[in-house]
Image (tube, rainbow, N blue to C red; front, side):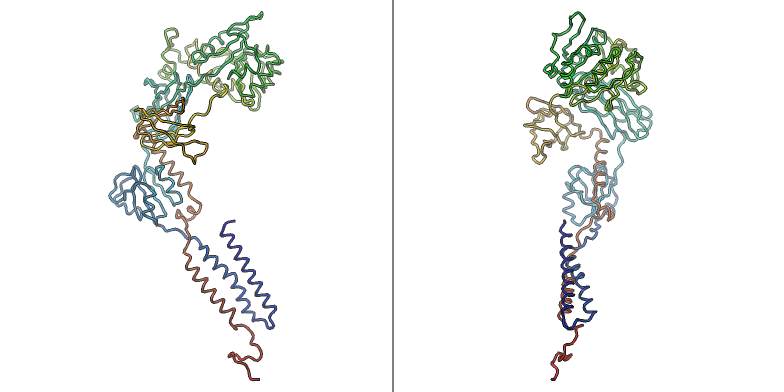
Length: 617
């Protein structure tokens, strides 16, 4: 219960007790008072309590309607700044304005002008340092026009080698223009035409580990350059997954899968049965719990699954629940016994298992973008410059009918080809494609790598601890936040300057710290032996992204105003003055005291004159 409600309850109880006291005295009196006197005294009790309540808790009144005009970056220079409000201040980012008072921040301006309850923000919007100072005030925002070009960008900060990635965003005032994604060599990887709302999406492929700089090139209707924005991406050279491969026989599909794993930096342990107790590949391992714990992903075909013993299947099911990933390559029809055994892993396989032709869903790209994605090739494996399409592949007509099955791969019609489901902490996938190696033979090695890289990334066991989290769109000269810091952390700038990060003790387990980069480029966060590069933009780079971020932060502040501020037309409420209520209560209390002690409205006792003297006997 809040203090106001508690006080109201106590005063109401006191009023009821006062009324009961009057009624009790009236009943016990030898000669009751006149009715009008009793009614006045009874009605005065709640009025007395009400005046005392307002004296202690003055009612709220609308705040002063003083308006403080706040000029921010890109604010138009007014001819008569005083006409915009009772006072005009200019933050450090605002342009020079003769009639505006220059202040270092909004908090300083509010201390200099304590009567201002309404803020009129003009320009790009409030910086992060001014957001807290603006809370609790009525806010009106007149945003400056957004610059032409890129105003929103969503790109992965980190990808694994060989994986594809998507860069999406929004452009402003670019009707009829185009967006192109360029690789570090300046070649066009993908192109898109923005929608009516300015949204776009382009894709690329990461190759060797390191820090790479893709770029977005924006052009107008006449194909003239409008803006070029860097898209820094870190291709992480993380430890590759530990893979165990079981196969019943060598075939082209397995050959090219092993070649791709070697190119991706994996060193799989391969066991290939060739019949008559003979085996190719690496030294045989016992298929038990201890062996499965050594690997992150198990890739096996349907015949290898059928030859597993009951003990190996039980150990495999336990390993999956502990985090092991499993990819079942189905190359032929599944027997009823194999389908029953797969139910132990949660796979409800249906379908005849007959062969069928299928075409993959491949984004359409022009020749330049396709050649850039394919790479330069090598002397032993040259790239076919004319290979712009993809051949039809073969699959087994099988599907997983589990309720929680998710898509791992889809065909050109949107139908699910491969699927996966979670089992405990691990994941199980079913792969019915039988000849993905034909993509490599047709010159589309990039597609072959994307297919298998995506499947391995989803199914493999998660390894390692969490990486630090960097604030997106960090800029030189502005504070940025780095979270996930454990132990001693240092940041090495591009010029070699070293800064030590001190986590905020009030941040708890998040381990966040502030960092002020002095220049743009790739910085490195070092904690112990581990190192994480992160990119910082130059101050004037991608002005549309900065302008949109300021606008959205200020609009969120407008939407987060308290309910009372919104109910009073943008003017926050405050406590009224208490002294008028104290004066009214004191006057009423004096009048009530006089009435209770006066003879007004009481019967005159016998033997007493009306003038107060005793009557003659």
